[in-house]
Length: 441
Image (cartoon, rainbow, N blue to C red; front, side, top):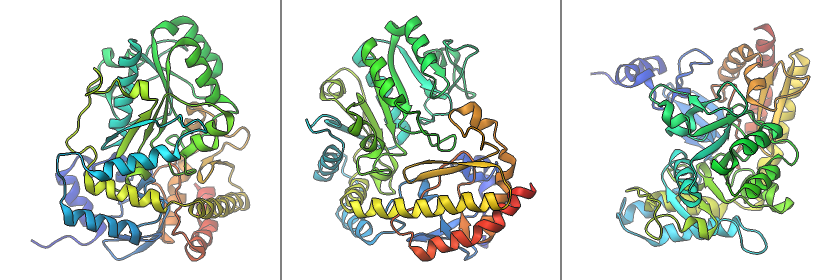
């Protein structure tokens, strides 16, 4: 049998074997159309597909590639770990070292913050565990989440908004039961009044509010001024926990994640953090972290059960340790500068083509929302109402020019420490034609 070589042949074979031909839905190019590029190698800021086409990458493995693809320090650490064994099923020193790095980065002047850490394998597992832990620690059942914030695909967090401000959630996916969804309340992001109303009506039943530190799964949506601090205040007032989901932003926006640029400065702390993406340096690793008295509710010290054969896998731990050890202040400064250049050029190209838009940006994370210049995007309803049809032509024009963007308008763009001026220039050169394609849509 001849091994397929083109992207189309690979996609045809994949669709015969996997639902939609993918193992994660957005990879199927469903919202932009066309045939997915099947990548076979990556280095620095570049991806190469099965047909030998090289792209400047603005997906970054959906965030983990902070240092770029195949950074030598991380590859060396992973090779050393592999040489020692793929996994032991026991405790080992590298998991403690990664936990030390997390704690040292995410703490205030009093040493409070990520006081204890539990390693898991995925962001979904991290948020699922955090929810279970919050319920176990408070003895309450209800969880509040915000429409458009994505916290993985566990059942209770795939609830869709109900019909009223303070109604219980409805199943947001086939296979999620009404009973599971009914323990989640979904309200619009950035809506203080709605959050106040829910707590006024059900505050004694609320175990936690879970929020993305800054949403990046409905496009990038900045929290309103003081909104996260308000979540902290109202949860404390009602005896509920605040879960700060930094799976996307943790160790990406600053060395201490988004909390480092907000809570640390403003003087507040969530009860629990969830981390993923960068913490694993490209391998499957995530974590729950938080206050010692809450974390000690986890087994074996407490009654809230969590276990995982691959939790703290030594190869993944090695990748995470090497990534965080080399994620210096200079790395973050470089990524911020390059993100500013690309985001500014994106806006200028769309302006020149007469395309109404807003650039949604928090730190080095950004995205574009079409037809939203009047007010920008501050919640999911506004994100859904944008002129999303313009993104497909824009995406394919960039792809044809050798720039790989997220294949959905509702995803963030990621740069890395490896995006040098040459890579950035290729992006800038591609933007005018792509903006014209968006204008013609």
